Length: 279
Image (cartoon, rainbow, N blue to C red; front, side, top):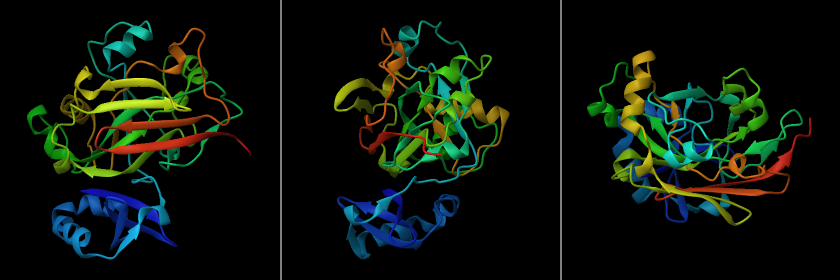
């Protein structure tokens, strides 16, 4: 099942079916995720019987607008490690992205005046569905509500010049586009066998598969939950492959007017144009 947050006069939650969207009567994705065990059948029936509207007639928003936590894992594809000239990690390397970096799937990506070295990173994003702490690897799948596409947009200058921590360079406003909807976990047979691609102005820059993750999603959940309680709606950016702009010689950063399209097999695509900061 594909569940979207969209605008149609007001904010609504809908079930996506092909080129149509069906209103479910709900308005809060976090509430839906928390109560999914009770709402699953209702949503299934809505998708089958509800009033359909062309998805082109509504505006898709970020599926989760204000997640409690946004974590992203760095250096989690071998080819990306090689291009960045960094050693293969023996432990998971995590950083956070600010809530205010969340952006809609087709909204503009802002190049801030204070940070012009903007880069792209296509990723599969796991959406946590249940509260858990010290989750064993073999049970981690039970804690995933679903998956969506993400772009871990990065301001490389701030990433390099922040004393070894990456969160500032990863947290500029609009630098976490996600969507276009959440595909529920029961509709994704194997999240570790999905192709990822990223194009800039139609030119393919990244192409890989989640089977190449160094630490898989279950290992990621088990590791993070040793440190903190994971909660419904938390987002995990699970890693990006090679081909980022910063690795080119010389680097190729995004500029005003560029269009970045990120796609994950079976989950859809997101696409945003680069705009300059106006205030």
